[in-house]
Image (tube, rainbow, N blue to C red; front, top):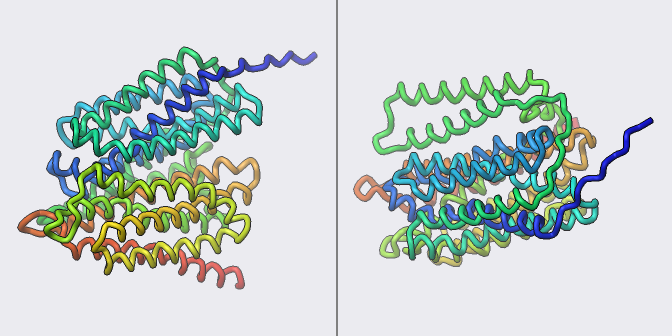
Length: 465
């Protein structure tokens, strides 16, 4: 005689609202760095390459946490793991709010990166405690509020940083996160863990984060004034290669790898990985270069924009990026992912190469941000949507997780490369980036955006063969 199945406790509306407010605060905390990055560099007296680390350390943690969070939620319960992660995020936010220097701020950003795992855990909770139809509505609400929080953070980071101090732009969202986490702890019904035989790939997580951090720190070190001695460059290269090789070896042998590299043996998956990686590297460079150019003094070749103005200039691009998420899946179904990638790559390349020669008015940069954000968003979302339906149901999580991690890594490496280009082209007398350094950055971003076109051509020839 089978045991009776006990239905899960339903989630009340206040608990759904608390999840939504938590997502809003997390989105705001995640986005405050971008418009305020030039201000942070001035206050902390760091270069663009070092400044890029502020946002990238959060992305690195997110890349590691994303594929692990769901497994932890299934094993220990989504509510319990969500509270754990929010404790980390709150500690990171408070640390960033009190940071006296760059290393402490970076440590705070590393802890804040755990916020990326909040979304899959929220999805686990609403799916367990609501019907399928109600879950779709609740998930849509959480995602919309996370996206909206990103826009709120971008819009208000400048006024808070300039009116109070940059410490408050971390402190205020963190206070909301702490309060809403307490509410979620109180109102959210517990969810039972799901027994699983698969373990957590902790060695893979540690090696991936170490590889990314070593690579980004290496870029900063190599492009500093005067440059490091040759043996230091060699040591950095050896460390990156050793960590990356170790990570690949661990992932190939792990029973339940964090990122299943065996998926790349499938041509469709391999092509989607390459397209996503190249597109996000280019968009990551744009993410770093545009705020820096807005902040260059108006008596030189820039616009002298403060953090508030930079946030306003970047807001249309953030809106375009959010809109692209809903368009990408539709475009993939109607035209096919390759066609969407080709159009997106052409738009991004043309925009960046045009910006290299035409960047004399703020609207030039605003329009470039809108075009590149929309093109990159549509292309990467189309690849994600196509991959989710192209593999078997049992591989959907692995395949989409690989692409999500690829998107995060590509953006982080692109932003770090943009900062390295500005550091390498710094004026030796003033220490600021020269206009030619920005031109080089835009050209490189455009050329990287063109590489998917070459990949499409090569893969077509392979298909015919």
